[in-house]
Image 1: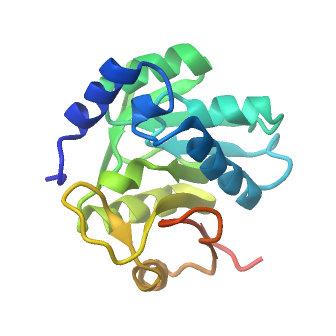
Image 2: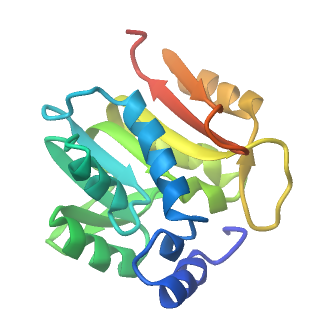
Length: 207
């Protein structure tokens, strides 16, 4: 089980802060944008021929930020486990949004199709959704996203050796071990943009 109840964690924030960065439990809009900027730096400069699946998409903010930066992908698929997020992200992005628990990847779409695995995409991204996973859930989440991507899985997560009853921190050593376990061909790490945060790219090819 998660260390906290995800539904309560996010629904309480939505009720208090509405459809804002704090509504998905970011400290501020600025910190959310900074994390998005680092994710975008690890993606190709021209995304017009690539598909992106956003694991734990929340309100669809990453896609809207891509549009603002003129970095829209050929196709965007949002994935979230909460119905509230599905409804809001669908309305805000106009894109396909799926309801799924990434750790047990059976995806459901109210548009009418189910799948026993996550949808394939060139890139999988995740910004913030791994911060409230249990330790045992983290490698499952990463493995399933990495398996579903064609090129790379790019994610951020809280970084360090802190122990928290609420939040999930990963050390560099743990991240590198996951990469070895998955047979990652190339790994990029960035931890120089914000305290206690790291952005990681797991590539399936070394180029």
